Image (cartoon, rainbow, N blue to C red; front, side):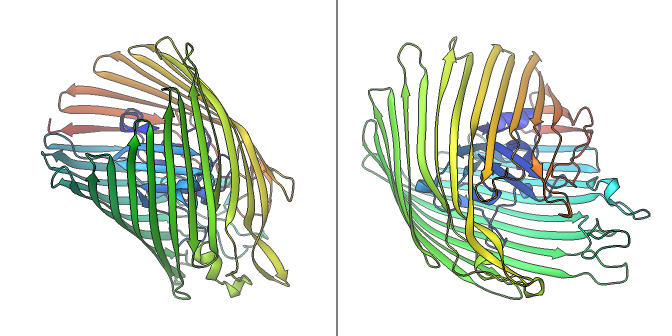
Length: 593
């Protein structure tokens, strides 16, 4: 779990930066802040990870594979990020093949508190964050605004650019407003609301739509493209507590709206660029009951109805899904725990699907060793674009007969505390089998479509070691080994490194001074080059070192600074897109009390 305290210590500003350290995850961002970001979990595809913000499903109905745009999520108002690895569709439904990333934003507590933060630094970065939060006996509130701007992030490798062409940096601007409100009318009834509005603009170097003299393949454009987006997330809840609080009932309504505009680079300075627009909307109505049957026996059950639509200048398709689930959480003899769930989904497009998960855990006496495991299934429904969006100019046609992608996975591991939990270590072995993967297939001369023909397998080990060396020095080490295989081609899957390791050191040499150092190591992996002229290549391993410092000047003022990529490691990840090099930032945070 990633906490707000960790976010503050390491001074991470976006969600992809936070997720880089999580075992079992590989984060690939094309070109710095705001760039297209993929998160691969336990070998799954990036589209097979479910993302929730305050319980809101934030996958985008307007995108081709339904993925969440991780790069657009700022971290200033995040309370914690919970990562559930392995198939989780038995409780969460579609998309949870690789796992679930659940983001919980901050809730107002205590007396009114205002916070203002500003920072600046490399690549024309200038960020501002502000918040106001608090609570009374019945009412809690939290308002937040974040503005992130980076004007000149170098992304395009110079060796890809034709001689004489200029190299343009990326410009990214993100303005996000969030609100979280709650009112307790009495001990039995309360209302909650969470909302988030994000407006983003990214100027980036795309690839030419035609070969240039001296090259048979597209090269980076001389002029920048523009991607603009507005995202809305809303959720309202009515909570009814019965039977002295043992039976909690939540009635919810959620709404997601993603409006995107993409403007291509002009063929020349005097030629108007092409432009595409898309709107994706999802509405959810849900009920969840949480019943404490007796001590150690808890039953959670619920129903959901999702309706989503995609609208652009060519099509306006719709689809819906009704799901019902039940989960039993049990504890026996203070040392044995068992969580079991079962879910049934009925999709308007492809019919029904049933998933499950069983997860036992046992704590050994005397050694306090925790033995744990799980087995479960997952599925991902085909997206509206995959079902209905044709591109006849490229000879591509959608397939309304697609079925869900599916997976079966299991894991087994342990956790061991030592010396009053000052040392804690553990490891988990996992396996995932993926079937019915949606792949592009050729069906005629210059004609292709999508079919459920793919199969893949992933297995590996995730491990960690936490050390509290002293009251002022903490060390956390992680290592992940992931092996993947396309069962049809018998080749390794793209962008899944075999080895990944991280190290984080938190040190308080003085009561008011906090120092943090982070190392992220990514091993060699199979990738494709930027213009796809080389379908498979192996990258070099690399390591990135970040350091951060914060000093509490007064009770109400903190100054802070950080250096990212301390040794200026020049890395392309993915291939054809530079990671930001050496960068320094500094700022100040002021609170009301």
